[in-house]
Length: 185
Length: 185
Image 1 (tube, one colour):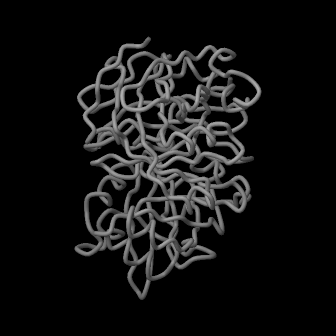
Image 2: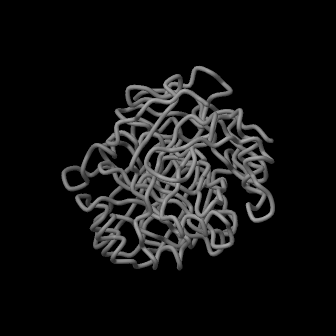
């Protein structure tokens, strides 16, 4: 398991503020799953809330609606191939954890697992908004615990020293960008 | 004015898919404004929809609610200081276009201006969802026209050859990341 330290909830939005692609993990009734999502964003600071799009066709959708919980995991560049793979496969057909080599360990506040090797983790409870869910596949969540690998995020700041441990940003067709140079203005 | 060519609507989501920070421009009743937003994301492919958070305290909020329109502009690294400046100032106090040197030119489908020098532009009409707007400051929009600088985005792909013309990702406290290396898996 990757090292992880708690992130103060009021700063949890900073884990997503720069727009990385995430993995959505979920669990319910003995099933668990993980999918990729490029469409997520922070929604509020404190208590922290996030928004994420989860398509109706997915097993993730079924598990998230049944459990009312999920985790947003921020994968590293080293995990880009696995991120693409879990975005292209369905948890209805394969156990994606086994097939793509993504381990999961227990979270603290929710039943969904934390994906090993990621850079950061946001444990979320669904804020029920049936109209958004049904009409737009849009899920809102309150972040109830947040964690980060201190080698990549500490004191409220990302610092990507290791090229393979940068966060990633999906474009389309297997193409990604790594998070690039930090600068201040 | 920057060069711009039309982006096929079905591919407009790719302008935001990698999670760049955007500028939200708006206009109504002879007033216009521009603010920065790190919290936006695609919501659907075709017709393309997006989501963006617009705080109640802002002049932008007033103009967007009154007009039902806005533009998401994707700024370049060269515009990072201006992006931070329009994020920190209020359009109620200054004309941000004048003060921060961001020119605006006419859009095609909406009254809000396109910000000069940006990399891409998404002209949007608000999808009225009063509960989301009031409770979460969350606005949904349909993209009715999309444009990009062909030197940075063409054939459905971003290609950042010029370091100063990369898109940017805000973290906090004046700190940004540039969009980094492209890679395929």
